[in-house]
Length: 278
Length: 278
Image (cartoon, rainbow over all chains, first blue to last red; front, side):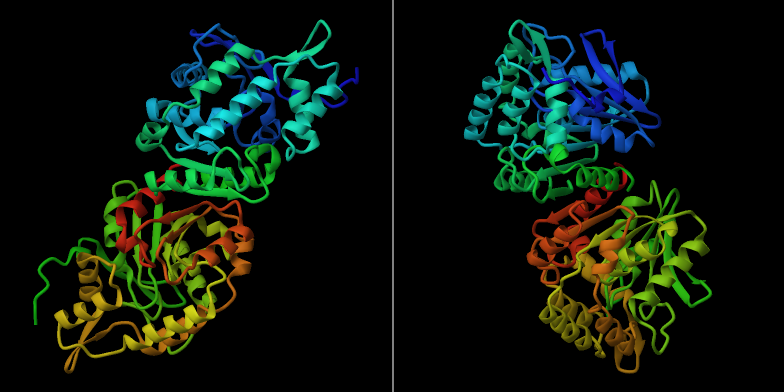
């Protein structure tokens, strides 16, 4: 098995935090106002390492393994939006660093906007990356298939990277490496995802729930970021979202697909910085 | 002549400020961090009264009559971008309330973004309403015609309002009234624009100067707002601007033309608030 030469995501220390409801694993660093990062389905907090590195000189950066993912608890059930959202509210309270800026990708975006609507006192603002209301049924069907296909045993890290590179053809090699090295555990016969297959299936189903109420009702600032080539958020879904909330600013990142922060970290960083420094 | 029943823009006190280079007339109110408002060509600071009213509970709001306009000085020449920009820098210094949030419409947007690029120490952030690089030559030609056609003597306020309503068919009556009551002076035979015709012609010509360098170089946060039905900023011009600066967030206001803040004050307010509270 190839050894990991540069586990860059280890630059931020990990710890598990008991938030009462559940124990969550986080990576953290920096100092200043609090930014929390929430990954997409099947990923874990390590995917935000490049973002954390860019913000850690001015902010306390905390990337969360959401329930069912990474090294956090994986209860047998409880993967609806509200389950994730109450985790966020409890975590912000536990960290005790005031209202947090929430940066969420995909599942993490859904959870962050919903948390801001439900718990405005815990949230300063939200950066909602490539997940909006009005995502089409066939898009969710395709997502289910991809999510469920990930539950495999891989021979070694190279096999994982090969698989991930095919699944995410636009994510650059260094970001694929973070996913491979951070998201798998040794089992008999090789490497298997840390994410719980049952949790992934339930979480994926839960993503279909209507997100219009959260976007309609949220009163905290929200920046919507979409990858121009996203197969998750269509141009039509974004346009309908903008009709629902014409006051919410939009950044469309050229050359990026759904995985905006991993594919285009510099533009994503500058867009977030531009928003939270305004 | 019909009397002005409700000069709502008079709720904010006016004063003329000597900024060294020139004397500028401003309307001001509120308290808190500084927001400066810069109007479009031929208008004056009073057009921002509805915005000022919305922000004055949390911000010091100052709407400026830019050089050549309203009750500010009208030198015989000096209406290039740099002339307006140095006025902004000198005014922020004179007001001595720290870096300012600049809200600019059209000419004011051009001036605000350019000021942020040239004087980042004086600017916290910019809301750039309906003026971008890449505006087409024929659009500027049409603007020149409209600007120059405004230099007339009107019989009375009703005649002014009739003229303005035809020139700006989407601006609601209360905002038309502000323009009419704030932007004209009594002369022999009736009412004539406060704005200097020679200054307007030179200013309009100056709007054609290349705005790419300012947008490319500005490092302070900028929110771009466009009216969906704008005849000034085409969808193509906005798309090219987003290619130039993919990190800058965009709000496209449905049902609004070029005069976004007068046509859709609530969405404009919420969009600005969303941006500066993030």
